[in-house]
Image 1: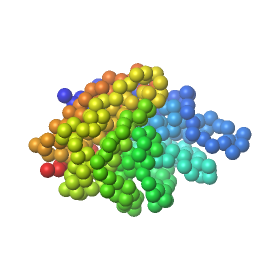
Image 2: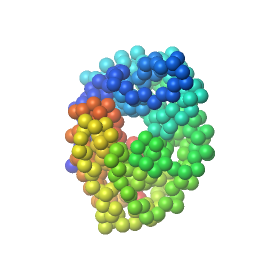
Image 3: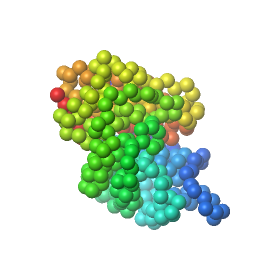
Image 4: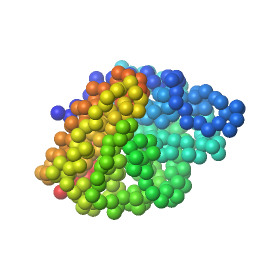
Length: 345
């Protein structure tokens, strides 16, 4: 039975995220120093996104908080979410985040993972129909536009996709970015779809040599989820059948079986809990896009359940996973209709 994002679980995730988005240390910074003057603290460099161990985790920690705030506005943590957001999401702080990006050395900062999550955060704020939500969206808009322009400059230069299962995966980045682009930037949406089709339209018979030891994304399933988002329904079914032609027979078996996590105190090994969550997200979206009478629907739905059962008990517990896993759990548990699903015959 698929667990629901009920009020109790929302409160648990919100409390977890509130415990790290303003926790500055420990901190893993990705920062190029050109001299001693560049040796700065995380909060000095990033006045909003200084917590959660690293910049991108802080961004999607805030995505988690704003999403839960919208879906469960009566949760006990709502007042703290609102007060903390009001303190940090200010025009001056957004300008400070943008100023960091003006450094020539920051051209590739957080590309593409952090770029996509920042745009996903903006897309979430764009869904809020309250005055405060609209205010936060407008305050963040200049930073979102910086990353939108960076994507539009980068994608024409990207002749090849990046098919790893970590932060550099381009399918994941485009999939998130489309939530923002479809609502707010038609040119970016077109660039994302063009890149996805250039990279993946002719992919066939995926061997799925995964997982690797520190992956939190499935290269195979993230590609399938991106293509579900960008292709018309009938074309996608043809593409999907060719991409995973033996899925009805349970192959590749590795895509259906959750990864084992041997040490959750090791930050890299703990990535595998994220892999199980993100696979659950992809399988759930794919299952919802396939007619319930089709044989592949049961395969996808069962795989989604197995992966979520394996990972959801471990979203909290150790900081190496706790500072980011709730975001991936939330992706997996939200109503699949949120991802603009189309049912395939």
